[in-house]
Image (cartoon, rainbow, N blue to C red; front, side):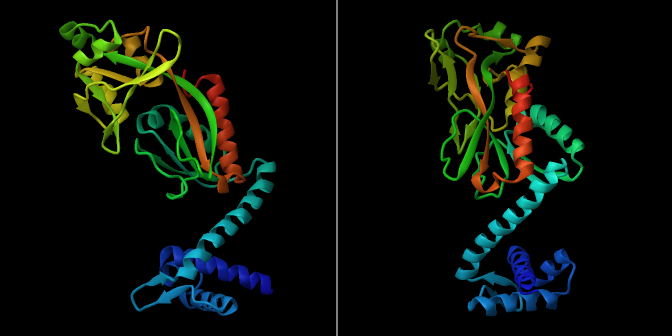
Length: 304
């Protein structure tokens, strides 16, 4: 009974600390506000320290409360993971999976794959953010992030390569008729270019050298656009050269809306990787989805 009361106190504290409200915590737990308050008070008495500052307006965490909250969240996640392991043996796992991926690729390529996974596992729900902003999965509470290219700042993260795709340089036929087709990499500097950016810094482009190695160049940032789909649309509209993953431009090339240029120097490989916090590694939903994505990558569904 004492162990159950202790666990109830921890759950009540985590809910209250997350919402910074006893009322909201009570609603989430389906109990009364006073029950949550008493449960947290008993927990504080047992620990001999205050975890929450109470006022008539809101709750705030004490320094001890902040440290304890992180430990409690991890412990509850481990308990949930243990339960999910047992459920996964019967292919019955669920919970909310928080995924972050590059915007255009996420909409066009990843979302259909995730939709199929969710349909096979009705207990699984998605919280999907599609953005070209680089996030810290640990800081932002993301279970699984998809990244292109080199991965940096990987402390506390697990990385698995899922697939690779080619970086294609493209332009619309109308643009090439008007401005000419570049023959060498140096001629890119004489063209209008559409480039993405991160943290207000224009992206470089990958080019393949004759010996098979890859170099990076800085194209003229005639137009800077922070969304992959909008970059492709701008290239189709004739605003200039663009470099994008092959999976996002191949249909446009086949239809004639875009033409590949500098093919001898284009096609540098870009890794597609799954990244997740090491604390999420044991969660069956994370492990299952990563494995499912890896299978899709082997089939060529994520890139080529």
